[in-house]
Length: 278
Image (cartoon, rainbow, N blue to C red; front, side, top):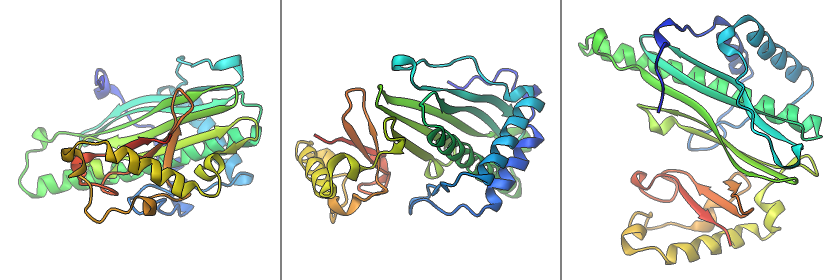
């Protein structure tokens, strides 16, 4: 539940707009056809500049102070913790944000890359959400709405740790809106701490990963009720849904869970579908 206490006294730091604008100017392209963003995976001078901006935001704005809710991880090798936590509200929107960061992986390049990807992705998502909130507010007024009756657009940023062990870390960063679910974003991070690389389905299952994953999903669907199966598209081809860009995570038992986005395999009411791959 979002706690809105004290929002009226909070303002979004102007430094956020500067970082958001810089991210937008780099020309991030759409990550997938359903609207998720493809995150640029470059380090070097760009990473240094952006990380400096983020550190500056921490120093100049108490609202962006680091939260004290760290999560220790197996063996003390890696931590996924709240790097930024802030809350803000104005007449058109309110924001609840918990933005994570990883550290102590023993792989400096991995940490830099992943942490930068998270910061850039969320910055762009927030910029787009703020634009939608303003357009929504303007449309409300143009259609005769009373400004005092306008319900601000809720924007939430959070994360979930799916799996953590001495070798693998799997977590999800999500951003969603109260009024426009079609613009929700989900970013999955599956990391091999030994190699310092992100894990792909092909890494896990081999070159025949598309067939292996599709067969498992089809077997699961066969066990569904008739009502559940009726939600799927009539011309659904499961194997065509599986690619190197397919979302997945590792669950607590270390099993791969493939995530099929809303509308990709079924009517919108079915939501996002998750399949444990045996």
